[in-house]
Length: 262
Image (cartoon, rainbow, N blue to C red; front, top):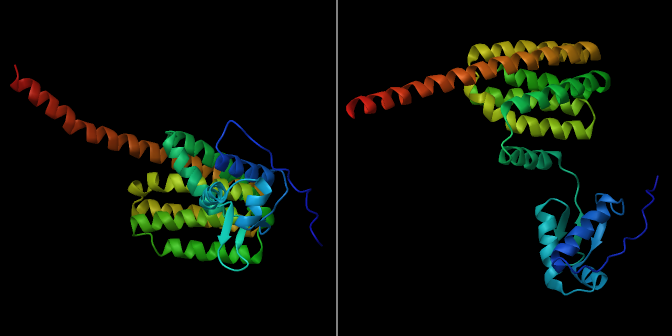
């Protein structure tokens, strides 16, 4: 079935912003308004110069910015030009994870987000998982099981299992959000992932896999809720204990300095 395209966008003049930023903004707005979808040909540099009534320099600058954002793909040579890029949830989730760090999001907030997103993801996965999805989940679980004695590698593999569950939910928005949470959470959890912790995590992942395989959405949701709450308690306790242990030498040093200065 051929897609019905929206009417051609009307490029407007702007006075309060640079030409390149105006071009960039209007192309993004046209995409959000439904004028374009992934794969659509936006135009050659000459096409866009004529359409916007501007010189080539701001068009090049705008396209460069859009390419960096993952909005367009640019090809050079005969038949080249700019096309609307294919979506890439990993690119979005990594950028979101960086922004979350930059605004100072706390681990407690991340766990709240994880509980909200992952319970929904688990229920959808139990309802929608295909045989292909189940095979991918099984492979991710086996990979994690083989790495229980390697701290950093196991944590990555465990997070990959979580992403595989999100993919099995067949909800692009939730999958992207889950990947963003995982990007942030991974670096927080890795220092506290001992072999014993890893084996416990595998058991909980296995229970979730079984619930998804059995298409039991309620069980999947409950397992994830219990697991996330347990993970939160253990992580925060380990983090606080580590902070107290690190503070003891500093306090002792301050006392020693004070004693010498008496």
